[in-house]
Image (cartoon, rainbow, N blue to C red; front, side, top):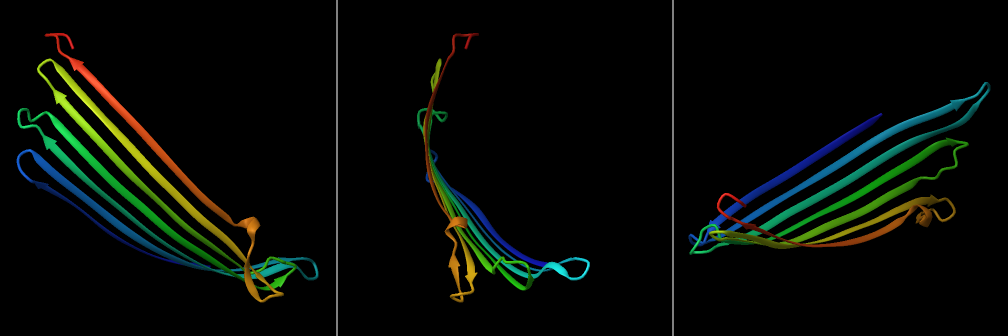
Length: 201
């Protein structure tokens, strides 16, 4: 048997403000959170001709909390001489945190040596993005150029703890535990030129 319960909250908004006819600022913000909980009961019996070969009673409890946020800010500058000549600067930040814990309680065990255990996992990821774009449309020549940088970070700390009968405490098992740390940097640039020669581009 199992029972699950989940709750989710979300909020998002976007605001644009014109400082004047040439300057525009846009801000976006989103946030969400999810909480999940589950409980399970399992009764396992492997019966032989005369007695039980293996059996156990397993009670599990799991909790997971996830929270994410995304925010962005854009600034757009338009040239007074030509409304199509434009400079845009953008910044975006996003992050996600995830916390998980699973508890397993084993009782009435028959030829089943696995101990009670706890699994814990703490995860966190973040990303920063910076971008600059420029468009210069002339009478015959159109120039577009831009640069962009993405900076990512991902971390995870997974722990497996088993119940030690001798000490009467939960102890970490290093063979089943893992520490993860990953970083990534992406840099890019582009430019494009379009020249007009009457009926030819």
